[in-house]
Image (cartoon, rainbow over all chains, first blue to last red; front, side, top):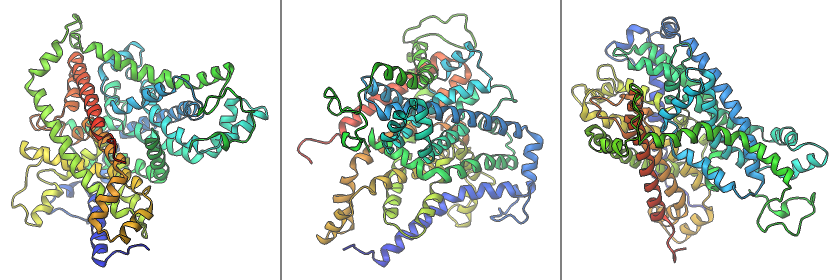
Length: 278
Length: 317
């Protein structure tokens, strides 16, 4: 016997959910239509809630007056490479942590989880000095290495959860057939875990794409800047050009939104199961 | 799902020395392979996360200013003492508390309510979740920029809507006036964080067995009674841990503030972590490190006391 909802209860519930939806989506809607308004009409009164004429002028201006294409390219390179490296490294460590018991396992897991409590920017100064000594300041590859380190702990916890859903008999059978452990891992386990691995990769990518403080600190020259660092430069000026700014914001939000929508089910699964287990 | 002995086919002969509860025994050679598997992760995290963290601790006790590195001697607790006498720092501590409490409570209440509404399946629930949960994919920094535009004093949509509905008569200079700026950044942060609570609480709610609700309904329990006697006790641990994670996370998330106000006007919206980043950017690594040490120390203390306070008491099942 399942208690049915009263009509009044339904009205409250769906009305409430509707209001939440409007509130959530509105900021995104607003930046989108701002970016497609003609530059002059952004500051016209009364405000238009639907652009009278759609225009790509803001986007043209953005790429014309700034190196935004370069920034997007930098962000793409850094995030794609760092996310890939982090996923591969985490696959190896997650496999060990999922399948074996050893004395220092708790310490390793603990050390990984502690990094989630302490923000990456807390030791910005000493990281900068370390990177200077390694000649990795103002280098996109230096930033890649830092992002890999930033992504590994949570990615490992997520992948560990996915490994635990795959029976160990799979790689054992492959190893009896003469595979090494490494090739058993990549030839047998990785193919059956593709959705989980893809989700972890996307999660890493989005986190690197969004990262601000490490990028601002470690990269100085315009030719190396990532998108968030460039936006930080835009908003620091006294007269923000909201036309280009809105276009830039849309271009940095939309890719991550699409990726996240594709992978969100697996990401939520990975994060919540990881959280429950520890 | 942990693999137990019985789950696995007998590919290896079980050894009598196998430790109880252990998943697998392995030889010395396997140990080397496993070490090689773990090594890259440990090296990366050790070098780029833990080494800076530890060297940051010693920096907190030194006079380390990037603008003048002629004297980087040990100064004991001077950096900490200077901070305690710094009006600005004390202001950021106060702001941090307002920021955390002001963001957390509405996030929790709205997120919880949404999770309750989403517990039962309905048509388009999947699509609804995908739409509503999108802020998750966006960085706090960009959320800050979005709200900076909406709260713009002259051309902002917030003022426009409030004036259209006659809630205000003249535009409010949200981000330029110290009285309103903190309210505005907190509204943005509430908006940003509701989703996280909703996701975590919803995941927990779905693990509560339906029979409990049915039994409560048979016993004639009303909505409120069911909420407090069934729902909340069942997901108590998740609620408590989610709140703890959020407190730490909100405290540590100055990105939104950087995007929205940059700490202004007149530093009124700076919290400890955003101030710390500003001091780092100014080059005073010693003082910034001292702030970092204090942040980590205070958060650890908070976590310990919080976990002690919420631990299940003996005698209560």
